[in-house]
Image (cartoon, rainbow, N blue to C red; front, side, top):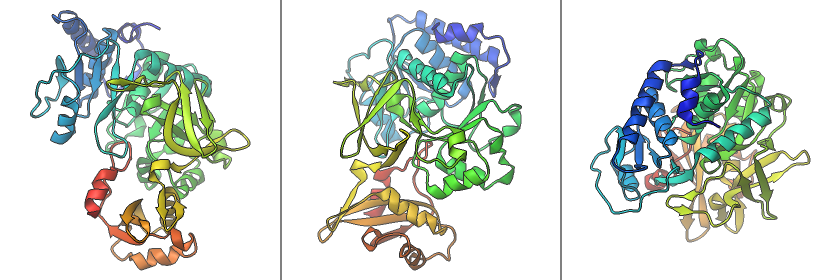
Length: 430
């Protein structure tokens, strides 16, 4: 496969919306020349660009020059920037200048490494180490699984995250079309054919389904990932004939390694579908999921994985048709009064009441119970009471699975991928 800048220069078709094609080429060439003229071979580059044009030009230039590159969220707080600069001393910073940056003595990363941020639910900034080759493997596996030559993407997710970045790379490397748009200003009228893939997180899908004119049904496939989706949301999408494709994947695997195809979804099948051809998933007797994949990251910066088998924190199983189902995360399992409870089941029960907009369930240490189930929720209106939700749960869940502590909030702290910041929730509960 040719270098990204060469591919970009060779594409003369009208394949970009939201970004001027020639401006992207010009800026990518300009930044590539800046790298070539830099006095150090393979300078370490930090990209914190908010503008998609500048971000993509910087990324294309840096990866073409095989420089180690760190992708950053321009909206990080000062604490998050401090966490970044405790790990890296960049030679070049393209984009928003981080506040109070400081110099530290750390080894230079290996040329060709692409550091993509992942915080999970911890809220702490860390990076997974990818390469052009691991990202390309993800693109090729996606192509083969969906049996499609050209992948066109409508991207409303951040490009500095793997969920947005992979959408661009699929379109660039397969000669598909690419639309980038702010998640707050989605305009599907620019899409003039059903060939596009749209990627959403559950909270985005929920908002769009509340707008009858959102035209989600026009998309060839609506990929859904980033966070667990609840049953009621999936059923609503099915009723609207949305060609939804729930996925399972993570930053470590350069997006999905299992996907439920839209036709299967519309036929009522559940779970995350079958494993993509570039990956293998094994499940231990206790339900623990392990992954081997050509798209697997090399490690967590600056450390490399010691084995090609990536042990996740997820628990799941394969059904008779070899469709993957996720039941929860091992680290989030709550042991209360000797009973095992998974938050996802409790959250699903609470959501089924129709009385909450959003909810997060976790376990808090307790001297009597070991842990107590705690629910932090956003009610649909001010008339909703805890008693109303509890009365509904009496019909849905065993008593030991009911939350013993409740906290009403106006909004849950979620990142752009829809993941809850567990640390911020625990601070709220202190």
